[in-house]
Amino acid sequence: MARNRVQTIGQRMADWSEKWIPSPFLFAIVLTLVAYVAAIALTPDGPYQNVLNWYQGFWDLLTFAMQMVLILVSGYAVADSDLVSSYLNRLASIPDTNAGAAALVGAVAMLFGYLHWGIGLIVGAIFAIFVARAGHARGKTFHYPVLCAAGYTSQVIWHAGPSTSAGLLSATEGHVFEDVYGVVPLGESVFTVYAAGLAVAVFLTVVPTLYYLAPDEEDAVGIAEYAPSLLDETPEATDADGDPEPQAAPAVTDRADDRPMPADRLNESSAVAYLIAAGMGVYVVTHFLRAGGIGEALDLNVFNFTFIALGLALHGTPQAYMETIRDATEGAAGIVLQFPFYAGILGIISNSGLSDLISEALLSVATPETFPVIAWLLGGVMNLFVPSGGGEWGIIGGVVGGTAVELGVPPGKAIVAYGAGDMWTNMFQPFWAIPLLGLTRVRARDILGYTMIVMVVLTPVFALALYFLPY
Image 1 (tube, rainbow, N blue to C red):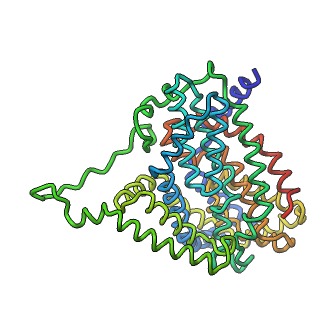
Image 2: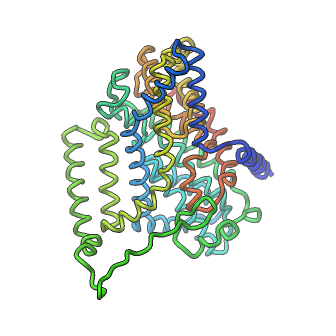
Image 3: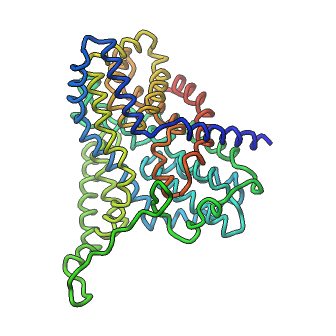
C-alpha cells in the first residue's frame, strides 16, 4: 500500500513536470535574460554595455565545451563496447524480483557513474534494458519505468568522482578561474574523505530507495508494453518520436569486384587501432608516474585522452570506433548549442560586476561551516537553469571559488559542495536523460516521478553530509 502511494505521488510529479518544464535550451535563454536584467538593475552598466558584456563572453568556453563533448562521446564508446555489454548481460540475470532488479540497476549505474558520468549514463540505460529482457525471458515482469529511472541515478553521484567537470577544470592549468582560486588538484577535491563520504552516503541512500519504489510484480508494466521492439534487438538510439535513427548508407564505389581496397583494410585494421591505443596508453602511464599519482595529475585533457585510448582498444578498429562516436554525437548537441550561451551569461556576470555583488551576498550569510551547504543549494538552483555541471561552473565557479577563499574554505571542498547541488537536482532536470530516453524508448514523464522522489529523499542526506563530513 505504501509503495502504491509513493508511485501515485511520483506519477503526479511526472505529469506536472511534463506540463510545465520547458526545454533545456529555453532555460539557457531565460537565464540569459535574467542575468541581463539583473546586471542593468544592479550595476552601473546599461543595456548596450551588457549586450557587449554578453558578446565578449560568448566564446570564452569553447575549449571547455569541446572537453565536455569528448567526455560524453568517449564514455558512450566505452559503455557501448562488446566487452562491457557482455558482462552487463551476465549480471542482468541475477535479480528475481522487481525490488531487486531496480536496486541492482541503480547500483550498477551509480558505480559506473562515479567513475565516468558519460559511461554511467549509457551503462545505466543499457543495463536497464538487459535486466528487463532477462526478466521477460524468464516469465517475469520487471517494472520498466523504475528500471530506467534507476539507470538515470548515475547522474546523482558523478560530481563526487573523477569525471567531475568542475574539479577537472579547476585541476587544469590555465583554466578560466585560475587567478581567483588557483589550480586545485583532484587530490584536494574528489580524492578526499569529504567527497568519498558523500558518494558512499548517496549510494547507501539511493539503492534502498529504488528497492522501495519498485512495485510488486502483479502491478508492474514490463518492457513488452513500453518497448517491445527492444526484446529482439540490440539497443539503438532513437529520435524524439521514438523512431530509430537513420543509419548511414554504405559508401558507393565503382570497383569491379568485392576485394577490399587499401583504405578499407586500414579502416578495419585492428593493428592500427591497437598501435594508436598503445601509444596513447604509454603517455598516460608515464604522465601519472612522473606526477606521482592520479590525484595530482588528472585533468580534463588527460581524462579524455585516457578514455579515447580505452574506447579505441575496446572497439578494435578505427571504423568501429568512428561509428560508435558518430552514434554518440547526437547526445552532445545540447552542449554544442548551449555552452556559448552559458559563456555569454558568464560575460554578463563577470564584466558588469554582478559577480562581485553575488559574492558579497554569499559572504553576508555564509560562515566557513555553513558555506558548503549554501554552495550546494546554489548549485541545485543553478542546475534548474543550466543543466550542465560544467556549464554551471563556467558561469558561477569564480564566485563560489572566490567566496570560499575569502572565508578560508578550501576551494576543493567548495567544488565538491557545489557539484553536489548539480547532481542533486539532476533528478528533477531531465536534460542529461535524453540519451537514456533514446536508448530505452521511454518518455521523461515515465521516469521523472521516481527520480524526483530520489531527490527528495536525498535532500537531508546532502545537507547533513556536507555540513558534518570531515575534509
